[in-house]
Length: 387
Image (cartoon, helix red, strand yellow):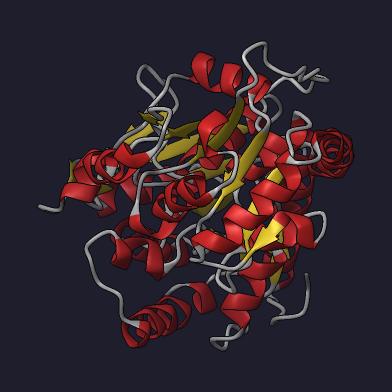
């Protein structure tokens, strides 16, 4: 095996579109890694025209959320997986779905070291099909740990919160925290957010329009805010809740913008917003929050115990009670009453984001790959605690 230029198989059902952090980060990591290493992408929905990829047949369950999010699951082909893995040094599994379980078996048969990313919480999938069962969620966690994460050589977690979550379900495999980082296509730049000429303020939220993202709480908060007559609300993202959210927002004095926006428009929103609100109840890192921080945009987040984004808040001024519209309204009012505090917070958030530089996270990932390969050659695999 070559330790100069690594040969990596990135196994991911879907790597196109903007349907979630695991999809976006997987694509970004592959693009960056390819500057110095060979990355073979294996999956059903891969970037079009990619010559170093192995396409598999895809399918979707008859679930509206899956179709709206354009997430395609791959039907494993053992022959193709075996051929791909025979030519690589290491296999990276991106999602805990059918493809990864079969890929793990084939990688083990060829004695290839395997790492797995933790980018999906059971709550993400269950909430989108209308299932709110803590017991079922716990059962899925235990199944993933027992049948996947405890059978690989290392687990890559996007945050300390994500790592602790798996450890709480008995994970014994070595864990490493590697942030998804600031997106490489987002140019870090200082943004001068001068007050708008008409006195309005732009409150932005970015993310899938899905139940667990709780955009409904943000709409309720704006409705209760003392500043509601001058708040321009934008909920940017794809998803199934668009019609429901529009109906809920009919009470707002200023009609909000709701729905998917192209990347150029999203960057314009980041540049002109006064504050980003991330009300999600379930989050393994919060890529939208990291993006906002990178541009010096203040962020207000939920204090949900199931969200890593809660740890990104500067202090309690920027954290509200999960699911509580009045709590969020109070936080927004206090901040909008003191715009100078918002501007100061933006500078501090930008400073924090410098530690999440994407180039550094990719370098860290390569170090982990090399460490796992070294252990594989030595015939050892450490248990939890190597992070």
